Image (tube, rainbow, N blue to C red; front, side, top):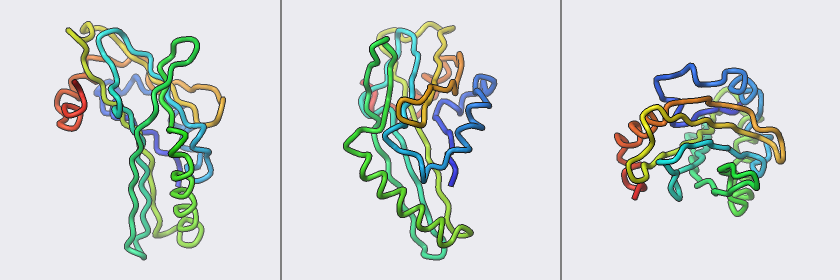
Length: 179
């Protein structure tokens, strides 16, 4: 099972904002071997938007069709601020052990029956407007790292915040978490 770099904002129409070398690099990282404590995303956002508590999540899926078993777990990513002011989201330290158990089961399935085992990892970020919201031409960027203290790799550059907020406005789940 390889990492699947999915962000809700990847659904934006401006696909040219996605940094393909980073996507290629992420696809070489085995989600079964990667230390979940090292996964972190950095989001550079303008004024007028925020990511609410529970608005950034990671979902892990694993299935074995022969056993007719499937597991899906979603974890809220923990917000933290770096000393330089970066907005960072990571897997909460309390969830790391549970994710490692998930990885071990998926790894066992993959080793025993790779032809009937599948899996995916997805990250979703919901934006909420604050006050009047962002200016129409405001942009955001997203970087990701997959190892503890590893370098951040740019994943999305200069995407339109207005497009992401429009997607959030149309999503019933986002409406339920935005104030």
